[in-house]
Length: 411
Image (cartoon, rainbow, N blue to C red; front, side, top):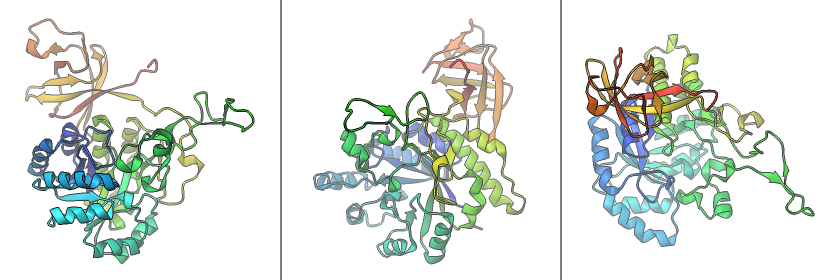
């Protein structure tokens, strides 16, 4: 049985390091242009080389997203960009547009090409078409069912990649014009304004200016808002289908999301592949995914076509935990340096989350400013964002472990 690759998003260098720390086999990243997450931090060309080197030193592959749909005015700039990154040893480029694929082949003929989900590949004949044109992997459209994935695997020989977790688009594999029409931001060059998450009302033509809410709750109606994809419960079916890569969405998400999702899928995937006969899905894995900000979960098209229960008709994300810090240093004696990302204080219970589902809840009784040493100076009572504090903990902690706390009801 072949274990699929676990592929994680890397929106910037910190996210890349977090993804690697928590167990990603490969990461995908974008430059400042020509990818479908233009609002993400992304990487400058100067930062790409060190990032790829860091990943490769940890045995992790790197894929560069060049998956926007350029127009004529973009061609010269895209040629220049591909020339700039040609020397960086990415393991593959992720592309969607045939013209971009041809340009990449002209400049870097040795580069492996993966086909983006934006190309809307929903059948095995399309896979064979792309295989004949040198594509080595196809990221299948989210609209494909489990049986469709199995059929694609039986009929084709190249690598297949499927999304298993993250945001779902109301449009066909993301090919949407709604954002461009309503906000002037073109989703197909990475500038989506996410109008499917907006609040909508009904207007009768003879009553302009009178807005009638369609229902749902006091904050309005969100008729296009899909729940988030989560295929965690279907790891055996995914592995059994013969796919080569399980992909997590989220280059614009924070590192708490990234750490939590990767460590859960890493644990489930490893446990199943080590002993399929005795594998049991664990409820605490799903509980962990519910601690991150999300819109509820759905299996999407994996088993059947989505219905009304697969959409989220409320405005807010579900969030019951706050991410408060990241470990920057971890000593053998239990001393750790934490950089605060949100305010936390003495007297609160915080949770350290590490690799392999490691988790330790800890009552903060004292902490010290980083320069104050091991406690000889007066302690600090709280840590503000970007402040570094030293703590003493009675359990093992590693660099890049994260710290969070349960969200108060009053929040």
